[in-house]
Picture 1 (cartoon, rainbow, N blue to C red):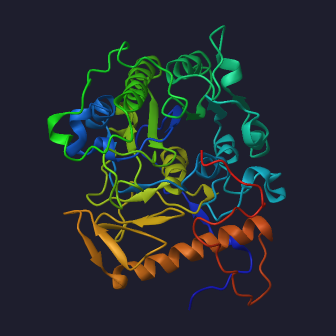
Picture 2 (picture 1 turned 135 degrees about the vertical axis):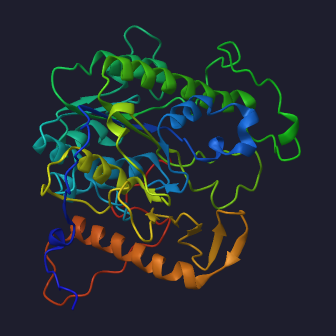
Picture 3 (picture 1 turned 90 degrees about the horizontal axis):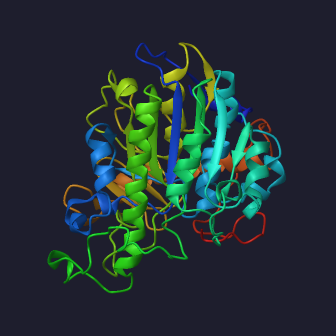
Length: 413
């Protein structure tokens, strides 16, 4: 029968299989502000928003069926800071997050001998972000206030060129390192002269004119072009400087911006997921069918590094190990290689083969229930601790898109 656990932490113990290939000496998890998956789709290529990322993906591994942890920056970044899926709790302000969770990535990588750093282009005082990272185990936390270096202060921090330049200066090769970066350029206020900087698209391309609803200007889209250009430059320079590096490049949430007024289920949920690192990934043979979400990034990285038998805690799984039914769980949606659906309406799925909506509760309902269970476990672990009364049922999960548990309202970004 199925074992009955009264300690939730025992339910999420993983044992690394061991990596016989090149282990990364430096790890960079790059979370790009509002970087959806749709700019990488062929039908939008004429906007030139992701040419750098396309180049990086050609020499790496791209996972199109990929979801963010949540729909806001703080809640998505909490998954990278604590290792927990988003269960509707504003963890940065919650008493249950004052000490590291067993799933906290910084704590796991410290055990593996890595220096742990967080870089945020915005200010660390926002949402108590800096102290929150320290409480969850990061040894170094760098914010936009450290990165101005005489430049003009901006409301939300520094742009991505300055962020990436600062990271280059503060990731020496003296010890293995685990680094998380959060960018900011594709976020209001949009103040860059992107046309003067070289964004080549001055008017909507002919193939997109019929779709364009004029709600987002080309100047705003150009900020994504700029972020993409600086991302490419950073990754290529870092590969030359630190050749045994691996990069996991994703977006914190969808941008809430699209060409047309009615983005489909995939376009309004999926985010970028590109893996890069020629030395480290040389021996990796990704399975032919892949899908995942933010909670899977850290387990994938841990198992690139950890010796066989190394025990760690995680809700996600190694994306590069074969799985009979790969699936990505986000707070608001679920994705497989074949379809995506939203938790608010799990009977309606969007086929990823032909982008056609179908009524398929038989496909989605079991996955929606599993996602609720994952979030319920995470909710209980934060609010009640690791122990369940013997035989006690798990609590119901929070409603999707609900108010956060602390009662404090979270900025949408």
